[in-house]
Amino acid sequence: MTTSTSYALIPAAGMGKRMGASINKQYLQLGGEPIVARTISVFEQCGFIDAIYLVTPADEIPYCREHVVEACGFHKVVEIIAGGKERQNSVMNGLAAIRRRAGDDDVVVIHDGVRPFITPDVLRESIDVARTCDGALVAVPAKDTIKTVRDGIVTGTPPRETLWQAQTPQSFRFSVIHGAHLAAEREGFMGTDDASLVERNGGRIRIVTGDYRNIKITTPEDLILAEAFLASPYKEGP
Image (cartoon, rainbow, N blue to C red):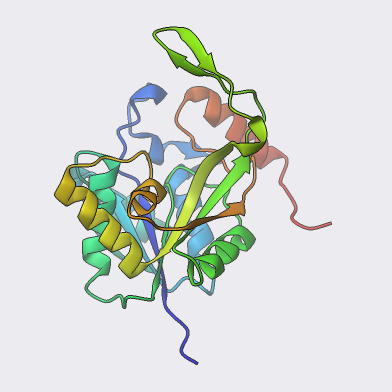
């Protein structure tokens, strides 16, 4: 039996305005390394990831190549792609690059460049689920009560047990995610994440339980929390 190839697509093209830093958030130091380098290193070290595609702002490609990919010796990064106006456009640019070598049943793992605490076990489960379903969404149960609000007035309280906080990675067979992005582009639809594009195409997305430490670093407070996680390493298993 032939095993499908697994590609990692890492969007790191955000401008990081909420961080208030002089450089984009993906290049900020976390424990002495750029955040995005810590993220890439997880995929680099996983034997079941065959190639990595990195998406950055066009004018940052030389910097990223020199100061992240070459400086850290990442051999699996096969291409750095120019990002688009929105994250969805950036992912589509990455899928267009992957299309040159991917088969329909190969798996694409889409993961935020500023989520450096993803674990290999969750990555592997996400890929395994994507091979048998339309998509795998890493998520954690909501801890807080969530309210729906309109014009400043609470309109409802959804049952908390039905609510999950979406994270990345989100994994899909190539034909599924590429088709969903093409449909969204054709119809002018902008989703909040990649899974939402597959959902609107009638796809069935299965949850993979993630980790509350798998945070997206977007604010100064997130960076403080990330430094605390580094100082107290999480050990998987019993």
